Length: 54
Image (cartoon, rainbow, N blue to C red; front, side):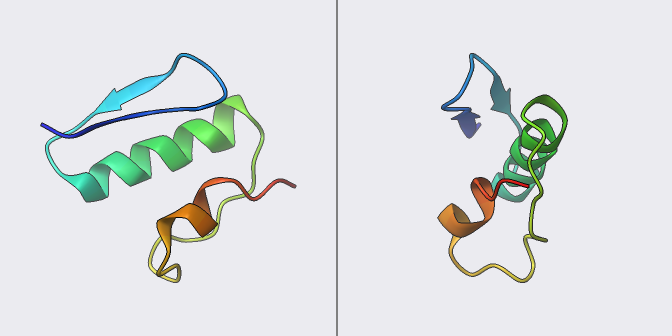
């Protein structure tokens, strides 16, 4: 099962699919780090989506 870590804190997510993984991390970033996130559909490069601050 794929897992991913947040670079800013100790949060770690593990899901069955990598799509769910990104969604989980983006939701975490929005809640815990107050970040505005672009919809994953629009973004081709995942790295663009992860850290876009308000």
